[in-house]
Image (tube, rainbow, N blue to C red):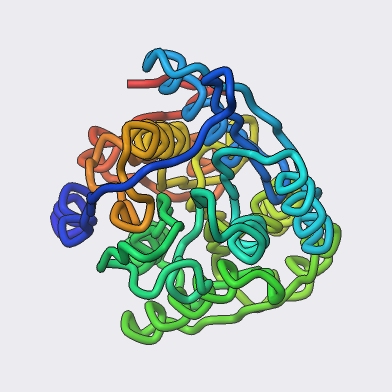
Length: 334
């Protein structure tokens, strides 16, 4: 457990924040038009929007927004990108991999930002995750999670030997996270059972297809799956299997045993900071990819009601480090 706690403090110590410099255009009246394309709506992606707006509202930069939701459809994300080009947006933000890719494919002369993209390099948004490219017009904030540490925590607390995972086969973010989870299980000596979905409507059936073959379910920050987390939670609850979510923002009101991951509002704040830097003359490409490294940007949740129902005891040292504990139906935030 001490190893887990240490990892929670230093899990992102190797991540880098890269900065540099150039200029962004703005509307004739000085107002910056920001086009925001979100792959779909769920608590984490919505929190990115809120964090960005909250930060920019305190900068004095005059901004207006065009918020669009692709409803999980890649062709719609491409249409939104064309719409933003027709509107002559000054800055565009893609929240989620597919939305960011669509914007990067259309815009070459305006700043393109991404948020909640796990591996920007694999998604083709940047040439390298850790090296800035001054020639590029793309920068953003990753939500790379400590997948191995998350799975290790799940296994140690529950005793699970076989971990199940539902992922989106058509979303680069989902594939990357599934592969990381699989590699983590192999390293930790655990069995791994994965099942793919093409959209959120398939999540419940996919979870049902593997629930009897696994000891616990691990759900990464896969947008299609996270948007249907309640369905996963329902299947796990009925089967008496523990559920781990890498997105704490989506577990409120569910029976999810453990959630450990980003506070996505923090990702939105970092996006706001990038927009401010660009507005002040810095070149997007020189800003590169931001990886959050402050432990305060992560949250650990435990549901003690679920733990009791499953006959699981959460060690006190982990409870002491948790940001949120749910017990007797009451949510306590530290």
